[in-house]
Amino acid sequence: MCPDTDTTCDKSAHVVTAFLRHRSDVLCLRRSDAVGTYRGRWGGVSGFAEGDPDEQVLIEIREETDLETDAVSLVRSGRPVAFEDPDLAREWVVHPYLFDCETREIELSEEHDAVEWVPPTAILEAVGDDREGLDGETVPELWTAYERVAPTVRSIAADDEHGAAFLSIRALEVLRDRAGLLVAERDSSGSDSEGEWDELAELAGRLLEARPSMAVLRNRVNRTIAGADGGESAETGAAAVLESALSNVDRALTVDEDAARNASERLEGSVATLSRSGTVLEALRTAEPSRVFVAESRPAREGIAVAERLAETTASTVTVHTDAAAAHVLASEDVDRVAVGADTVLPDGAVVNKTGTRALAVAADREGIPVSVVAATDKVSTREAVNLESGDRAAVYDGDAGIDVLNPTFDVTPADCVSEIVTERGALEPDAVGDVAAELRGLEEW
Image (tube, rainbow, N blue to C red):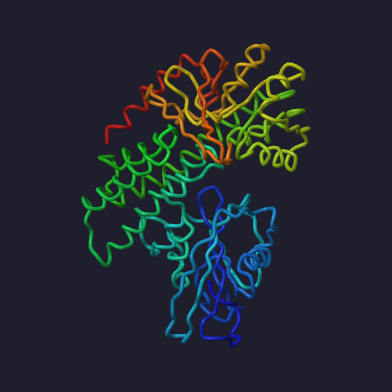
């Protein structure tokens, strides 16, 4: 988050810093002796903003990691961080960015001599702590820059692009990051385990309220807090929550991958799907069925991005169609299986998912086509009640006539239209879901 030469410039220097995220870790680079400032310190991908920061940050990523633009995707940019370094008599204005990255394989330029993929909280941790930190100091205000682009309760509530599993990981990151900061602040303010616990429990409650229809977010937040409350760890307060959050992020990523792998073994021939489920997408990428039909999934049309991704990364023939044509496609094309994700699986085996799932499953049932719901068991709800979210009215109609508008974001597919629920434990019959729900209720007692 600082320039790489000793070139004289104006007192206020604008620079970009990009945090590349893979799974739930971020890339940290150690600055080499080839740069002019902050040698030996850890930072993100950085450089002078010589013009438009949005364009410059992509140039820096390519130059410092050898990753092309299509290997990273912008999550968000943040408000600039301005600070003065009295040792250099220089004011820096840092423009922070967060990108998701498909790989950890990078090639360092001469500007850096070491690389680490670490949880962002490692930026706060000194070497020698029980948790693994970075071996050395960071550049100034690196954590502040990260906080400007880190996931928040608000960003999770507003996200209408990603699936429930993705957002549940982001929710755990919110808990992890806040707990890590509270632990780091103990050196200056002392330890108040009870106060830390109250603050993090309140944060967990706000996360639960952010997306009430997403059982997986609720279950994973509950598991994290329950694991920190009276567990076997000697840690207390924020330290216990941090330890539990780090562990549960890893667990969540693993079970989602296992569910995708189990599903991929079933996806042969021709498959129909809709909306965007990261677990289904990974299953399709692994299986590479001969053909994939993808409903566009209005109003956000996230199905288009799924179709493009499959076309780029698999040998499958990919066909997109309107949502209204889904029943026609199943009746007229040779489709072997429907594979969809789930935001929530109800205790009776019914499935809450993106609007259009019910119509697709009912049509598949009419045609005798099996319907596989791909979801980790964390997506099973402990509640019978359904809280269905609605989208923006203007996405359907923004005219002036006195017209009422319905824009449901989710619908409910009856259990008798679902053939199986493919999880990290294997395939479950819909009537076996109740046993999983009973297990998950035990996590809510905190």
